[in-house]
Structure formats: C-alpha cells, structure tokens
Image 1: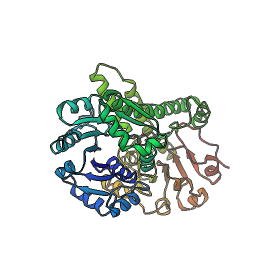
Image 2: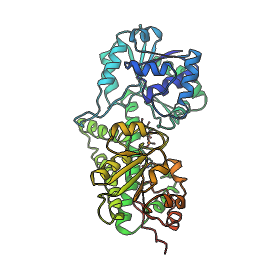
Image 3: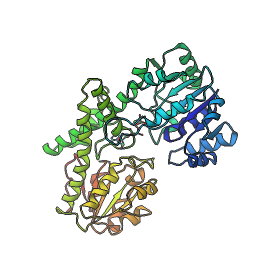
Image 4: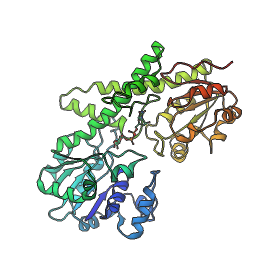
Length: 433
Ligand code: UGA
C-alpha cells in the first residue's frame, strides 16, 4: 500500500520506518525542512535504538521518502497517518491541538476522494469526532503505545492494536495496513472514536498511577522505617499486580506521562467528571524530586553550597536522549540553585541537556564526571551506571557519598566500598567501620 505519515518526530519517524519495514511504500511529511533533509540523508535527529538502520535501509531502497509538500502527499496515497505532537498548553489547561488541527486541515486540502485520515497522536477524547465533522475525508483513530527506547519493536510487534473506526471500510483499510502484524497474532480491539482515544490516555494514566502508588509507599516507608524495594518485590509477585512500573525512585518524566495525566484530568473536568486523583498522582511524582534533593542535602550535612556534585543521567529514562520533563535535570538544576557546583554526565542526552540547561557543567565520561566529586546522584537508570565499580569510583571522588535516585544500585556493595549511600524509600544501609 502507499501510505503517508504526517509529522516525523519520535512517533512519526518510527511509524514511517516501520510501515516501510512491513512492506508499504511510505511518504513522510513534515513542515520542518531541516528535519526532512536529515531524514532524506538517512539521519535520525534523536536517539532511538534500531531506527536509524531502518530509515537508512528503506530510504536507500526507495520505499521510504520524505517531503514538506502536502500536495505531493495528497497525490501519493489514500491512507494518511497523522503523528504530530500534542504538547501541554502554555496555560497548563489541557493539550495543545494546534499541530493536530493544522495537519488534518493541510492534508484534507489535498486528499483524493475516498482517502482515510488516521490520527495516531494522543488527543483529548472528542477530538476525532470533531475532526470527522470538520473534514470531508473519512477519519479513524489508531492510538500508539510505543515506548521510547523500544519504539521500533513496539511498533512492529505491539501488544495490541486499537482501531477507532466508524465504518467497516475504515476497519478494512486499517486491517490491510497492519496485515503482517495481525497475522503474527497481535490482539485487535475495534471501538468507536471516544473509546479508542480513551484507551491511550487511560493507559498512560494507569502507568503513572502505578508509579506514583509505589512512590507514595516510599513516603510511608520513609516515615515508618520500611524498605520500598522489598515491598515492591513482594507486591509484584502477586500476578494481579505484577512487578512492572513498580520501580520507586525519583519518579516519572518524559514527553508523555506528565503531560498526559494533566490533559486527561483537565478534559475529564470539562466533561463534568472528576479525575482529581490524577492531580495527586502528579503531586506525589513531583514530591519525589524534592525528596532526592533533601537526601542530597542531608548527606552534605544540611547545605549544598559549594559542594561539587555529579549527576549521573540527564535523559528522562535510559536508551533515550529525550530530556523533556527529565527528573534528573530538574533535580540537577535545583541542586545548582541551592549553591552546588553541578556536573552532569549522560551517555546520550548531553547535547540536548547542554542546550536546555546551559548553566550546568558537563563531563565527557563517567570518570571525568566523578573525579573530585563531593556528592554523586544516580538519576537515570542507564546500565553503564549500574556497572560502575564502587571501589574504583571511590578512588576518583573526593567524598564517597551517593544518592541512588533510582534505587537500583547494590547498596551493600557500595557501602562495603566505603560509600555513604542513601536511596529514597529505603533505610540508610549500615555503614562499614
Ligand atoms: C510512555 C508509555 O509507557 C507508552 O506506552 C506510551 O506510548 C508513551 O508514554 C506515549 O504516550 O507516547 P515513555 O514516555 O517512552 O512511554 O516512557 P516509560 O517507559 O513509560 O517511562 C516513563 C517514565 O516513568 C520514565 O521517566 C521512567 O524512568 C519512569 N518509570 C517507569 C518509573 O519511575 N518507574 C517505573 O517502574 C517505570
């Protein structure tokens, strides 16, 4: 089939490359000429394992092309996926639909009769219906559940497909697009527009709630002398609960969960439904950042002023260079504001971090970051950081003190190597000597 994919950010670039991988001819469309030029040259403007290879392979074979021209897109094919962003509005009141509305209007002006416009962006419930009423072309909604860092695998082998359709024809078209994925046994849920839109926002709200639940338990553990790591392990053995998204620490960030729960609570309010608990989910999450700063201060005897602090991690999660609403950088900047001299190291997100937080210091490797540090904070769970040898690291730093904001370092090993280690929700390990 000949498909267009409008928007070539994380979602769009991945979707376009994966549709080509499934055997379709794909035209990616973006208003940003620089992005299009980079993609045409097979360059991916962000870090996503496996994506550059796919884009390179399919641009070379001619199965994947990119353009800035909507007229070309309208003439190219009759199935148009809209994958543009829905950021948080500047007034924090819900999602900003400017890009979605503009993309639908731009492609609708050039479609041929019988075209299907398929929304993939995360939108407030009611958006698909509104767009269907305002454009002649048929609309469908096909939410995306990919995780950054696993975007290619999640698109080629998703755990489910959701089609929000209002005609048999739209369902037939989408079934044809995803034929190889469906043939592999992927479950398909078909629904009306409202349910399809809600699946996405509800899924992200649930994941955020699960993380904040365990982080609220961390607060209780801190007050009562419990250990949230052991608590989560025991809870996770109950297969009705499960161990995933039960990792307590500095909390969630990124371009999706934080903004999506805020937009969802706002939209529900407009519909007269109270999802106030999501505000608390958000508040618990933000309190975890405060707690990590507090632990840092405690380890430094009450004041961070003048302390040389190393922050390990800048991306909002490992295997990503995405720093949107990153807990690591938020905490790093708070430490700087508290008077610390902060140096950050991240395996992938340095360029983005430097641009967004020019006042922080940056190191080129773990060793350079750690040398001379008076305090270390581990804030993004890159495997490289877990592999640091605590004895070697102790020799590099000035004072062996560390806050494990992700709760994954082996506390006994670090303590045995002479470190003072604190982790949110966990009791302070007994120190050697
Ligand atoms: C999230 C969802 O997981 C995807 O299903 C969804 O498609 C995507 O948003 C989206 O809406 O586009 P993503 O933002 O890539 O994906 O990141 P997650 O893997 O969900 O992690 C989010 C944050 O939660 C990270 O900061 C991570 O460190 C944190 N987290 C995750 C925890 O603090 N604890 C956990 O147990 C799990």
